[in-house]
Length: 618
Image (cartoon, rainbow, N blue to C red; front, side, top):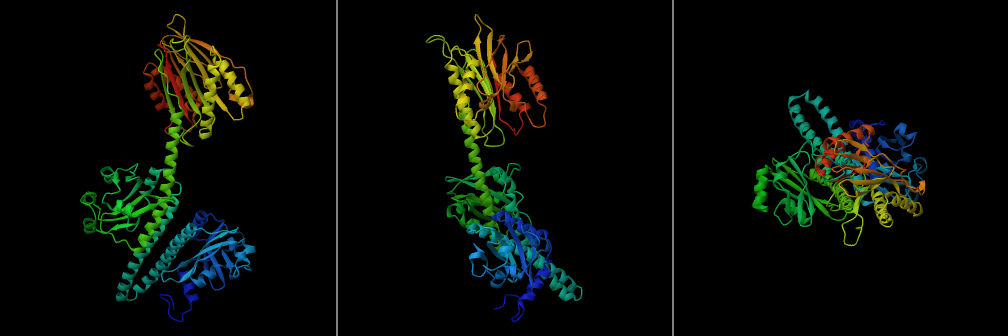
């Protein structure tokens, strides 16, 4: 039977050539077609992809990616190398895991000349269903094409066909304009047809663009807020909805993800819905299918008064709710709402459904990342020391994770009392440690936990609890044990001087930034005495220690290098700024002091972990 729009006995080859000519495609690079080839290469992870159109004696390649010379330069292949002709002849997809094992293709010269082993090609058609060519994916190795890969290729082929149809229809529209100049009556009819075709073509282009944008914009999202932000500008063109909502499933509820940048009345009024509620979105969740409400009458007939009242207040008339399917479970619902009645045709619904698949992938990835960050933060908080209750010494700490990596790292602080001098007596001196194990990932946090425990043990095993002795023992252990431990730390002891009220600070510094001492006279001193950093390759080292008297009312500040080292900033200038902040605000309560320091010196998205520990002696 002849295809629609093709007279019986007509030469299909001439119709194909005419359609290709109208599309304005030849054996030359075309920006739009090259884009489709790149998308195929990226989505299916193949080395070669192209848009192939069959002519009488060759196939032209207006879109290609990864094809070697001389074929890439000529943008054409002889029919002897063509697998596209099989797609054109049959009008069906051609999927070949290994061309060398296929009786039709084993002798095809493309195997040797192009390295064509695995091939998948989907038909490209015009508006009448005439097959013009194929959208092809090629691998140099045998490959079993997955259902998801073939579905993606099919979606892209549909989008590419829509682009071809748009070009053909645009060319036909231009031709119709010439006819309009010769006859008024014909002009009026042609204009009406052209207008209708233009609207249909624009809608088709918008649908194709939606899929392309969804595949590109949602590929690199980093969290649910980022997904929600990108949804805002994803739906444009003909039939643009007035609101697009993202609802994520959590046990028996749907939680609406609010736009992080723009306040919507929808998101202020209803943030959480029980799955049992009689709303279109919850029905889509319960019944695991798309739910379409064309108008208010259908809403009143099928849903609760609460849903009707909500839609009336928001000014919505038509809504389409699409379930978001993850790889293992239903993740939530995408709600697409229009203020005016909107007819959602088969093509538009198919496009929105395909787009919801990309959105679901982004949501699943975002949920995984958000959960990982949450777990990492909980782990970091669990690994940080609870500060001891000290009757005589005020103590406060601050920890800021790096904004990159796993949100967990190797910076830490520690504070604990030594055993009392006599059974039942007052707690002994206060030991304080601030350290930085290289890295801000799970590995660094693991090493940090081991180092912290080892240093505690080394301290408590060596009365009279010399910081230098404990660090020397730690060096020895690190040079023997089979794990990489590198970084800096300062280990200190605070003792009440005999007869009081002053205190004594004894410390040993392994390559760490110098602590700061603020005395009651307002002077800030850098405690610069230090030894080499901690690293197993440096071997055991005989650590030294320094001692300083602390007048009553003195404030000590320990910190890690993330506080003063920032890209593009001079470290000496940052240290001077820290000294000035301590001098200006050092008399304030310690939590407020740390807040002011953090606000001035810690970047909104720090590139390294930051620890600050402050102590004040009475």
